[in-house]
Amino acid sequence: MPNIYQEGLDKNTANYAPLTPLTFIARSAYVYPERTAVIHGQRRYTWLETFARSRRLASALRAQGVGEGDTVAAMLNNTPEMIDCHFGVPATGAVLNTLNTRLDAETIAFMLEHGEAKVLFTDREYSPTIKKALAMVQRKILVVDVDDAEYSGPGERLGSREYEEFIAEGSADFPWTGPDDEWRAISLNYTSGTTGNPKGVVYHHRGAYLNSFSNIVSWGMQPHAVYLWTLPMFHCNGWCFVWTMAANAGTNVCLRRVDPKLIFAAIREHGVTHYCGAPIVHSLMANAPAELRAGITHKVAGLIAAAPPPAAVIEAMANIGVDLTHVYGLTETYGPAAVCAKHAHWASLPIGRQVELNGRQGVRYHAQEGITVLEPTTMEAVPWDGETMGEIMFRGNLVMKGYLKNPKATAESFAGGWYHTGDLAVMHPDGYVKIKDRSKDVIISGGENISSIEVEDVLYKHPAVIAAAVVATPDPTWGEVPCAFLELREGATANEQEVIDFCRQNMARFKVPKRVIFCTLPKTSTGKIQKYVLREQAKSSAAIE
Image (cartoon, rainbow, N blue to C red; front, side):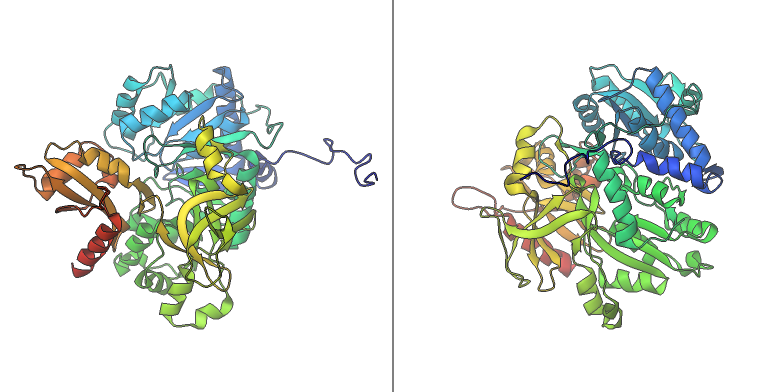
């Protein structure tokens, strides 16, 4: 029998448009042209000016032959140029690849090659790393330098022109149209918590649009929020908050580096209402001298991710007027896709119970279809008893398209019709998810994912090391840090500082083990290192210290 609601009721340009966050900046520039969009040092841009800069960038890129399916990489700090890129690059049909500024040259080179970057915008601060990376890359890349007036440190220009010169070549009247299909890629983000080479996570316009809105609704942001950029914009496109702030018609307060003095000064001067960050950011703020917080009388909302916040941090942040909300997600879910949605009566509970409730990974974001805990082989739901462990899985619009050039990993991650996070968790009786362990031995330190196997690979290169195992150990500042257990070759010697120095020469600094313990590694009868034993040792030794 024919469906009467299908006949003659087709999609057309009058009743349908593909979802894209590119519409947000166009609307804010139209409705609030004179409202301040970006603050960075002495620089100020309205929404109309920010829109014009993004259009000039798109026009200049198009003149260089950048278009549908091309990749434009950015090695940038939290500056106005990075905001421009989040709109100007996808406006050409190209895909934005934001690079982690903390990575080493070899990893950056891999990303530039794997992502087939056609253009690279790079801050002068990172010229030593980028110069080495470009020397390893075989493809031709147009390099455009960003010379930020707020940076006075060392560095050199590597490209043929500077950013402002480049966008001056473009037109502010560049036609502003979105993709013909909302499934088209908008950005490429590389994971840092996998073994071997990082995987390229591809976002689509639809997911970016929906998560941008979900950030507002799930967090309860008021219109025209003043958002401080303590979270790196390179990390999951700043959890989609670059696009969120355009939808909100709020103000972006840029910050090149995380420093409590600068954070509190910005909050005080600009009336910051919202910010996001890993536990380390909140810990730095909570432990900052009281005089830095003087003069701040308004309420500030903060999102915290990664390790659950310790009680002392939640209490200290509440005392200085910061209301924390815990969110959970991964690179593969556009950043936060779950939130520990609060209930009013929680506030009347003892602080210990509040921390227990607020430290959970929570429930799905508004724009996400589902989060659950399943037994990964049978795909059956675990009991809601707070004890039976399974794997956290997501389903919905806030899940990546897949991994670039990696169909095998993509298929494995979507097995059974859910995205497998690799995080082991329980489901509480109220339907809230709580992480218990990580199946892939990923260490989350200060919000950064660290692969234990990647660190072990470097340790095995040390001439004195015959066996190595790296596990997480609790840390009051970073949440958790890498702890290395080493077994030395017969007759060989090494000390902790020597090993740490060796690691610093061969990997990004945030991945370097903070503790090194020499011992005979515990092994199974088949020779497999028993990491669960080492985890307990690491926890015990950390507790003693």
